[in-house]
Image (cartoon, rainbow over all chains, first blue to last red; front, top):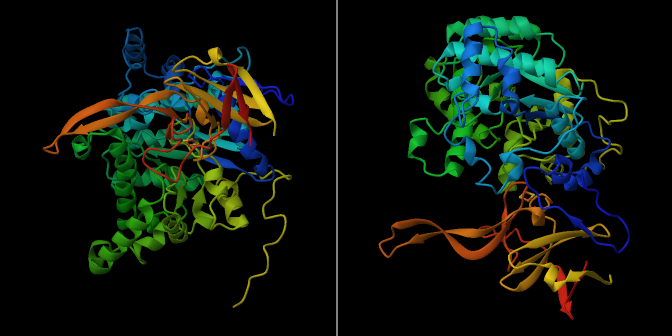
Length: 418
Length: 121
Ligand code: FES
C-alpha cells in the first residue's frame, strides 16, 4: 500500500490505478470521507465476493461425487468458464472495457497464512469506507437461476453457502451472509434453510431474482413459512440477463443493465403483493436488493390504480398494494440522484426513514459510498443514521457498539412555526 | 500558496500522465499533444481519484447524411476516466462530455526553463 507523503511541500507520486492496485489505495479518498462517519453505525447490506476467483474451493464442497467431478473436469480446460457455471453474455462488459479496473479484477497481493484472501479484500474495503458490518453476496452466481439444470443450481448454491460460512465469514465477525436459495428446487431450498439457519454469520436468505419462476406458486409456501419461523429476512437480489427475449432488442450494455436490474424484481414484487403473500406471511421481512429505488413508486402507483379497478383479481388484499410495499425493505444502491426532487419523493413514498438500508455493492462499477446518503440535502440527521445502519440493526438484530450514536449528538433545532 | 516544483518537462512523456500529492492536495499532470495540463485529483461525482484512472480517446459515433449510423469510432479528444465509477472528463476542458454540471478543477501550471511548477489552491 502506498502511503501519501505528508512532508510539507514535498511532492509524492501516486500510482495509476490498475487491477493490481491495493483496495486501500483505490479507496484512499473514501477514507477521508469516512472520518465524518466515526460515530455512525454503518451497515452495508449488499457487497460482493468474487466466488469464481476461488472456484475450486467452492466446487470442492459439492456433495454429489458425479457433479463434483463434472465441475472439476471443466476447470482444467483453457479458457473455459468456471466449471458448471452458466456465465452470461455481458458479464465481461461490466468494467466498461477496461475503464473501471476494480470491476475488472482485484488482483492485488494479500498476505498468506492469515485470513482468507477474500476476507482480506473485503476488510480493506470496509475499513476504507467506514463500514461496521458488511453482508456479502456472490457475483457470477447471481444468474445461476437461469441454469438449465436445476440440480446444478442446488449443488453449486449449497457448495457456495458452505464455502462462505466455512472460509470467508469466520475470519471476521463483522461479515455476514444471506444464504443462497436454489429457487428452481423448492424442496432443495427447504433443505438449505434447515442446514444453514442459525449458523454463525447467517443473517438471512436470498433468492437471486434473475429467473423465470412464479414466486407465488404453492410449491414455495413451505419455504416461506420456514423462513418466517426463523425470524430472518428474505432478500430478492436483482441481476441482469441479456439473454432475456426482451433484452435481445437492446444493443448497449448500459440500456440492458438499467432495465434488466429492475425488471425481475418488478415482476417478483408484483406477484408477491397481488397474490397476497404479505397477508399469508405477515412476519416475513422482505428485502429488495440492488434495483435502486426509482422503480418502487412506479410500481406503487401502477398496482394501486389497477387494483382499485380490478379488486376481484387480488382477493387476498385488504389494503392497497402500495401499503404493503411501504412495509417492505429496500437497499439503496444504485441510488438514482440525478433529480433530487424525484429522489426525495421516492424516499417519502417508501418511508425511507425506517425502510431503507444502505448498500455499497462494492467492488462493482456502480458502487455507492456512504456519501450517497450523507450528502442528500433533504434527509434529517436521524434519517441518515437510520438508513446507513440503524434500520439494518433493527431488522437483523445487530448490536450497535456503544461508541456509535443511535440519535444525533445535538437535538434538531426547534421546528419553525409559520 | 507557493509554487511546487514537480520535475523537468522531459519527465512528462507525450501521452502520459503523473499524479502527485503535496500538502494534502493531489494533482494530475497530463501531456496532451505537447501541452502540459494539470487537474485536481478529485472527481466532482463523489470525490474519487479521477487523475489516477486510465486515459482513453473519446468514443464517437458517425451519423451519415441519411441519419444512419456508421458505428462507433475513436475521436481525437483525450479523456481521463475516473476509476471509481467511470465518469469521463475531456483533458483539455475538464468537462464531462454529457453533463456540464460535472467538471474537473483546474490547477495552475507553469513551465520555466524546462521546469514544471504547479500552484496549489
Ligand atoms: S467519484 Fe468519480 S466517477 Fe464517481
